[in-house]
Length: 124
Image (cartoon, rainbow, N blue to C red):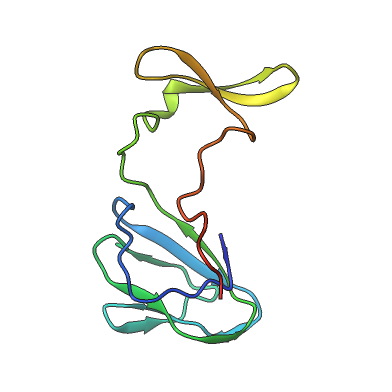
């Protein structure tokens, strides 16, 4: 989910296949440009392949939010099938249990979860 995130022309090199995006909020303009064509995504979902198609956002006024659903390129040994994970309560905390590539049981929690792929980015 993005809040007032402005992007310059780019491809999503870490994504795999199509992305689904929809915008909402009290804003005007702020189109998503794909193949040089501006798309008004405010309350109008768009499916496009962000890993292959150069895209960017135009300027807007107001508060612009967007939700983007996408699949990451499976380059981490941790990302496997959902069947490899299970949710459980451990020491009073809900965690995700999984086995790593060496069959060692590990846990993901709020404290040691995977970082978001866009962590550290700057908002406009």
